[in-house]
Length: 252
View 1 (tube, helix red, strand yellow):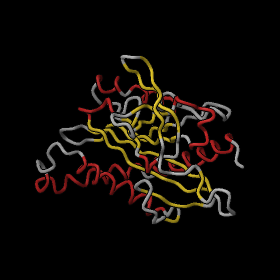
View 2: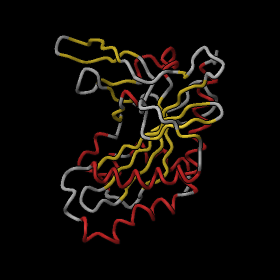
View 3: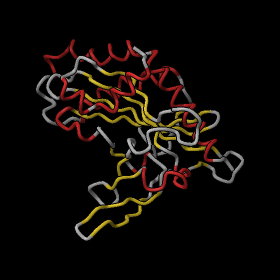
View 4: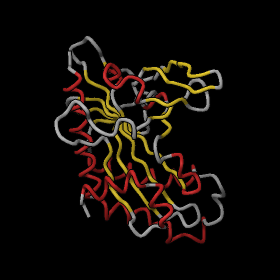
């Protein structure tokens, strides 16, 4: 049985692997995001207020980089994040979240996570007029695949988040975030989950669990791949959580 500390060691291991890969490929990634400009006259004004169209374009770039690296064996299971693959010691889910500046509050302290994207079964505390109530949350992913069998491997969840300007689609901020495996509920308790708008929805409160608390040293669960330091002051202030991490990393 894997200990909670061993779980965090694996989470941190792959967070660092993916982070350094994205930093290595940063120029190629940013160039990929700009390729839309070559055919701008053919798409501009056609995406309207539907951000999913931009998300699809961004996903092509991010997933092409990961797939080109050959990070693991893709898995065809219908339940899982957009990227789901197997490596030697884990099954890994990676999902992309894009947020435009007009909705920047969706990413400043927490992010929406789907049931197919995490394994954190826990309790959400909901504030109501009658007081705080508890709401149980059931994810679709297991904490371990093939649990109890010889082929048992842990399930790890990561998110690439992108903040972009809603008018010109310029990229302002790119992050890589690790959500705790469900077995870590015994340590993090209710801090991880925040109730969503619907009864079965949840958000990951990464600002409440910003580090791997069972590992020595300041090991952050959030890595900032890119931060545009020239962005408007108001936006920079709203994204101060990421900016502080970016400056602390010093990878620029």
